[in-house]
Length: 208
Ligand SMILES: N[C@@H](CCC(=O)N[C@@H](CS)C(=O)NCC(=O)O)C(=O)O
Image (tube, rainbow, N blue to C red; front, side, top):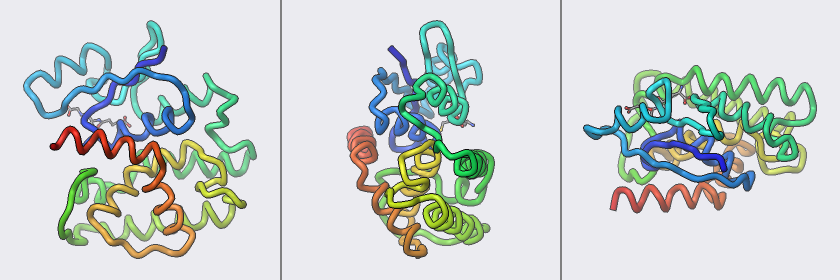
């Protein structure tokens, strides 16, 4: 049985990504949640994750840390789940936008940190507009060029959808953010996805 070590559901955007991937793809796993920003956090994470960060996936005696490498591991271990698009060109673009999310959008991540249960006003500042414009372009063009008739960025659910899931939460709780039509349709679909709802319920219980 796989175990996914994660941080708070309300706050840990990196944890949401592989959790959503496992959940939506219906891959069985156990969850080990470590509360962040507590005196014992560092020592607890260190029991599992060599990097001292979550998420970390444990498969028997192997630890796989870092959200994107967990996604790659799952895609290889469960080829029948087709976690990357089958078409080589679509797959290359899906990998590119996933890596772009993983390494970029510092302003958005810094000024609008994920807070799943947040409510209230927020401001566009520090370059967030530029990050939002690029994300809107990614969502719109992926769906236009590769979405076909499916509701996900590349038609069928893929790693790319999971990588951008925390941004859906940010746009919901700090927004409203105006998006082009296909991007907005995807954002709304993702926000109501059963796995996203389940994560949100967990976040609510944590903050209650
Ligand atoms: N690049 C890593 C980032 C992981 C990361 O920064 N995780 C944060 C929580 S979201 C963490 O573990 N922080 C450690 C701490 O708060 O002590 C990934 O993609 O998984």
